[in-house]
Length: 88
Image (cartoon, rainbow, N blue to C red; front, side, top):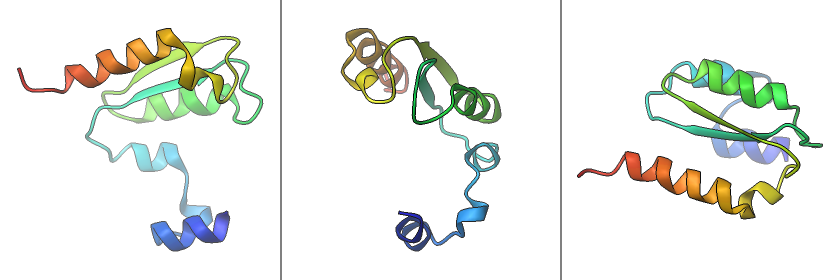
């Protein structure tokens, strides 16, 4: 996985620190992270959201790492976030 990402992104794994990269972003982002995520620490999601200018953070509980993708409230909030960027 590491070699694949390094090749695709043309960046060394050690340079792939999302909060550092996020500081230079200008496109709005919605960061969704579950407090009980067993795969990625919750603090990582918070750190990315703090570093990304103009980001929004949505915390969930009890959805884990993947179930949040099927959660009706998360889907609704994501659609709402995306609609904010559409021209009127």
